[in-house]
Length: 123
Image 1: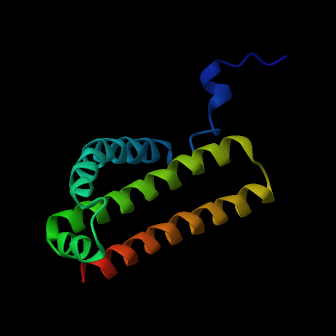
Image 2: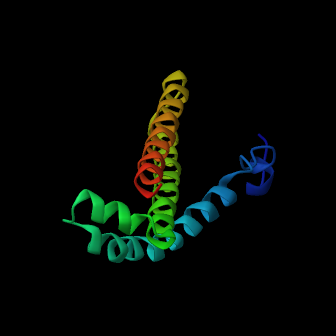
């Protein structure tokens, strides 16, 4: 019978080397969204209910367009990272890889669609 310490049993089973990076990326995007979402609400609020000309004039200014674009980018990246954690925890095998690819494509497509809409309105 082999008597192994806990450390010896864990040797060679190390981390995947991306957990800390992923953790900090989620924390940073959470703090960024904590600032951006209220800014988005307060910059989007005055344009809400206006005519098309009023909205395009409002979003032609750089600050509201920039806040909306940053909110879309960081929000969808945060969604992608959070969905990746859920998928890695609950889906396994080939289905995991396919689901990760689909969710990543969905998040980047939604991000691009939002940025295109903001650019079309602002320009």
